[in-house]
Image 1 (cartoon, rainbow, N blue to C red):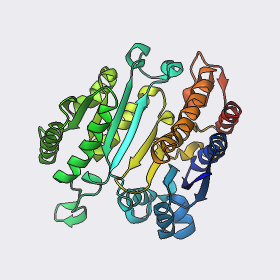
Image 2 (cartoon, rainbow, N blue to C red):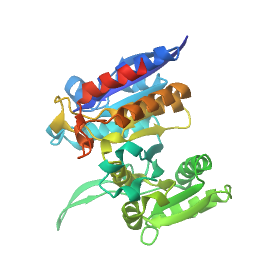
Image 3 (cartoon, helix red, strand yellow):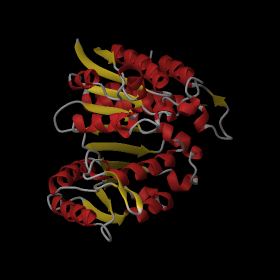
Length: 359
């Protein structure tokens, strides 16, 4: 029997709740399709601060490196906001990405027909949406040097540096163009080349990469226009290619096209080594422990893991179809409720309904 080693990082807030549901569902799916998943749960984020004093302990890093894939729920809580920057949960997340060289973040945004009424946009605007945000994840302004805060004669000054090399742009652009070949053969590169030198390099290098993909239509948009277009006409997009900061913002805008950020999965990949699969949403500490969180984004992240990391495509499709069937039957967590929906369920009950479909 095939066996896979998965590191689980439940993290903070609603993380343990959605992890518990996902763990149980993956156990069911793996038995159905004749393979085994061995899970190892490790501290990360705020939970690691509580247990180890730091957000990303070395023991967690080593476990991640020795895995076939990493399944991450969510990190963060306001109670850690007063800690020094290097000890906050978000710093642990940045260190995870850099330590595993997870340079490519893939965020699919596809409308589920039964949820078109849950979107904040009119149904006609979102019903054809099927796009992917390809975000560079280990460079840009989040990692650039120098950065910091200094005292000046005019008060305190804070600064960060947005920086990219040709190599860093090339490798993420290659991911976007290869993905577009499997989809609708369109790439929209998003930058701010009218004012930023780093974006001028981004655009120039993206054009050079596009020369190897003559069948792919490449367009460019400034980030402010791209944000507007995601709300004005989202179905125009196929693959959106962009840097770390812009991708962070645009992918959250795109998430709301589906009706809830609780619906979207993501994969963070490297060229050689385990990928990290995680929902786009945060830890939502305000609803933690209330059994009302939406576990679907993490379940869909698990499906991406099955497909991309483990090559268990049939199992991934089986899980995705079961989720769609539950939604088609009208079951919703509170974030997806609408006037047309009457079957509100909690996090654990959503997992129970899904388990019944998978048996």
